[in-house]
Length: 461
Image 1 (cartoon, one colour):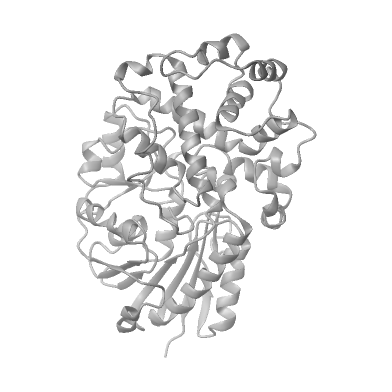
Image 2 (cartoon, helix red, strand yellow; image 1 turned 90 degrees about the vertical axis):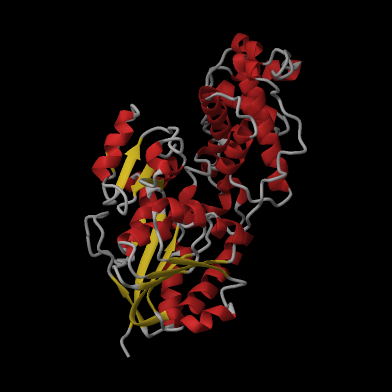
């Protein structure tokens, strides 16, 4: 997954803050789960207000890693409450402000319990009981607010459309341009919980073998509808503890991301460059497509993310990848690779609007200024990466964004300034028209994250 590339190391993120648990007995009380959700949102709010960019899923993983005594059921409930607040952030904040209350993590969690879980005042009192590890008693103001709003639906006729649909108001025109009269359906799908998709590592196993191994663990896997090596689970499971995962049989990867890798059409023996490789999800998929024959140069300016690829390559049995940390997209190291690649994949930094169902916090944290900055960065990366493609080779531009500014508009600009390239139709079974000019994936149509892809072919010499 790629968010706008500001990577925050979590090593000390939680180290200086109090914990709501200190023993394995703490989670016997349901109120402790509520207290954990409030504390997590407090820490995340403080982090984001200071300019941090850590996604929610990473923060939760770190939180649980430092509290291994928290059981799986408790983790699911804490995560459910946190994500419930983040998915309905705009609506819950609207209800607080309507009553003259100041937004706070405690108020947002209380709002989630009232509006999303429909808890009664008696049930709320059982959770906010002031016991050890539980939240303090509800104040008179909180009690009155909960009593007034109990049983009311979350949407309200007075809510502006961006609030009712939980998306940033400044994006309204851009989203309307993409979805038209399908806007409410499309945004609702972007706000829903995502499935868990896996990519089978065909260097070590078949899809049938992976499905069989998951069924032995009493899971319910099904093949993904579009990606040829994908497997889908409808709910989260403890996958990384499985022997099949440790043996490198599969990676966790959204079907949309798998389809971007398929779009490259990498073949055995080719020379390829994954220009914005990140932690290597698509690099691994491309290596399997190439049957571990040929060469891939995986580059990125984010050293921490690129270093995460090394153990993944070893687990997957991949030996054709060389990694390189770049100082910038104009790094002098790239001069020796000019016109050398059969293909270059540009999975560029973006607004990550296509990932809202996995990281709903992005809706609140992405600004119009950041979008302007990242579109400039996308242009610079494409211009510099174009020289690496050899005549007849393919430049594959991809984002996990749904916005035209980052997708069609960028491709149009690139083609206008690089006449040696031409767009090639994308031949993937994701639309009725199998020769669509671009790959465009949306949750409400394909049940994947939102992705865009274009294949740009460099003319022969």
